[in-house]
Length: 183
Image (cartoon, rainbow, N blue to C red; front, side, top):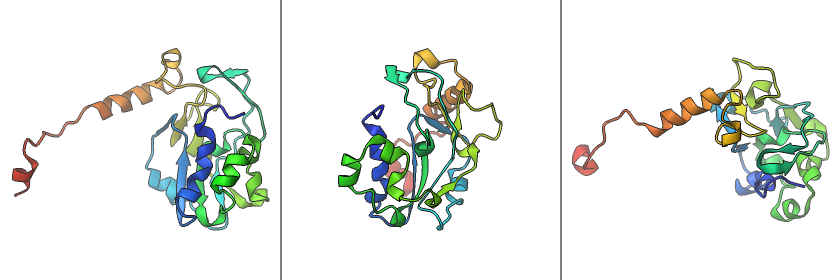
């Protein structure tokens, strides 16, 4: 019941890190508006994973790209995850390839919800669901973002377009011969 092939691959993050250290996973339909190091600094070794604990119950039956909108406990918790990789050893490729979407997205692989730490809501602001906030650190365009024509006027679209515009231009002079410039 995943909406995209990508929706399961997020759970391979600890495996790809060799089950060592910490890692941040976040969906690709997001815009980071604050220093990501501030999220990194929230790591708490008491938890295997830290998430924003949304109480998200979508009202629509169809979401972006004409995918069925499913409703389940812990909806959108896995869209931003701060993994303590050593504590996520259950997430092997074999397990991720055979587990159900609900097992993965509801963190059944942890065996205990007490291993899920809470992050401040500002680190996964659900655009057009959560009330507008000037403190939103990560904007999550979960129903479709301004990168799709049908959602070009959604909330926070001006922020997304401004960031895109800034990324498309460089104010630095170009160096024609970087070898000569360095010597």
